[in-house]
Length: 261
Image (cartoon, one colour):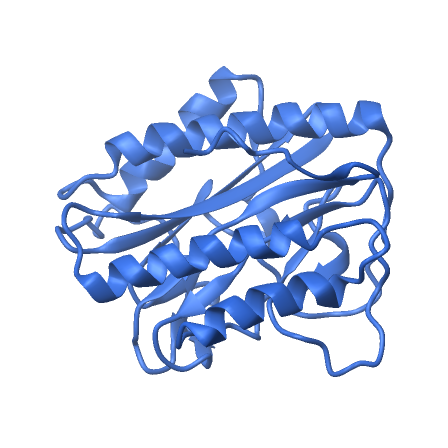
């Protein structure tokens, strides 16, 4: 689950044993997303996806992280087409052939959080949407590659932004990635665009970062709908969202949710 930019969140470094717990949490998240990939077909409601996700996570000994978080009503954030993030599951909203659906899921497991997201095609999608998904996913891995000890957060941000913009798309600026651990949202913030500040935090071993590019086919501008949650592109162009939780180690970044296919 992405967050709006703010300040003051503490950066908390994790021990190896804590990172191992977070890996288990994220493997549950990944297994849930893989299950939903198979079930997300035309005619299925976003509410049904939510029910499947919660049932599976609880069967693995995890608690859905988003349900009730600041009042969010679902276990999943399910965002269709022009919806960027934080779409609320609904019995009335059915997946349709040609849609793209962004599914963001998190769990709490043994005191630590996992968080990951994918954007899936429903049936056959057009070339514009297909290319958007490809570039957004690529930009996530460019950002992950930059999560090296000694770099700065801006190196992650710049790697994402450069790949997105050279392909003609825009990155969302109203919502950002974040640190994650015993809290769903910790410091540091991880924007998908370069900071206008002179210096962003130095990347250190023990950080765990939720890196999550949100990329629009059209303008970067977004708006929050009347439900107070669902974020849509201002021009109603399609949007894609991919996310991994990544541990920073002396040997390089480790994707904790790396079982996501």
